[in-house]
Length: 149
Image (cartoon, helix red, strand yellow):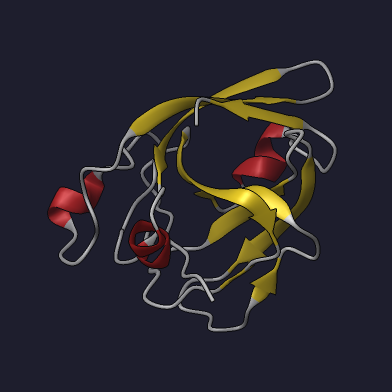
């Protein structure tokens, strides 16, 4: 089972507030990520949790997450995964993404909740963003996510 991460009240706080959050991982590569909704494109900057160790820690111990920041968890080959919120101090939207970039599922994850949140099918990536941000931007299942792996 993989761990998840946090969110915060500061709307434009950088995702890398880890420097102030003891125990939070730092130094992950950041890439631009785009979500194409019906008639709108949303731009994010995300950290890439590429290794199993980085994925296990995720956004644990973070106290804030900027409005257009997040973390992407790529999987090659695609696989079924389940996330939980152990040591994750803020709530998140967890977005499960198929190989073709299509969003298959969006779920809300509460801080520190140990209940597993399964993908429901093999996925190529999971995106974590600030809780409520997907609804705020009108991001829904079927929208298309692109980023540089």
